[in-house]
Figure 1 (cartoon, rainbow, N blue to C red):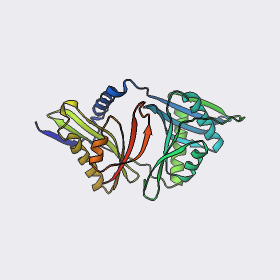
Figure 2: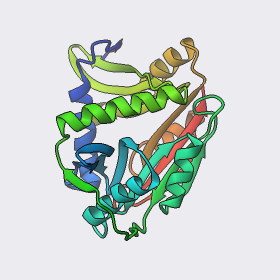
Figure 3: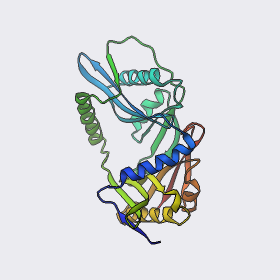
Figure 4: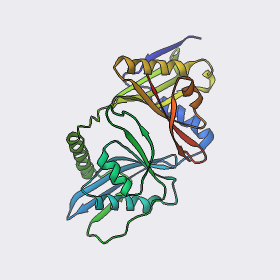
Length: 276
């Protein structure tokens, strides 16, 4: 048996890698709830705040976000708390802008861990809120929450996020990177990630059950880390659950920087980092 490793430049095998990993995860987690929730705040028909989130593995992850002031942020959080409190472990966000970090501390978020020099010169704070206690106050805003992104509101959110990033000199560009292992023409493993903010982020690593124990996972990691290193990236981070590949990553020099409980429910998620 000869395994061939190729760079999947067109990301043609993304679905295969994702489906393989989901199938493996379900052996431990069973069926898990995944959904999107999008909250918009309007004042006199003007959008003054918007937040796109994703629910996965018992946590709500904040994605694209903008808000004109702390009051608007409170209204966004209140709406998310109303929807999810008692149904999830908590809400989490990653950010390295000092003003945003302080804003979320005022909203009751605690710093779970810090990723140094991500990007260089900044520290990314992973922040969580498990209590989800809202703030009650009178207001004249209109709040809309929906599962699908609102087309017009999303355009404004994206424009505001771009303007914020430009103002704070935040480089949000990402380069997708993916390698696969093939036995003849059959995919038997793959690794996916992206290059962003001076880090390689590994999002998925999967090997077909029949092909485990043949160093395929290690070889895939070699390929993706080597390319990142050749492009000038010096650090890598990833998340792995209790039942996944923590031992493999530790052998490769990764260190646990923080632990997120019940992610998924009944297990722990380990955020791991290493220099490459």
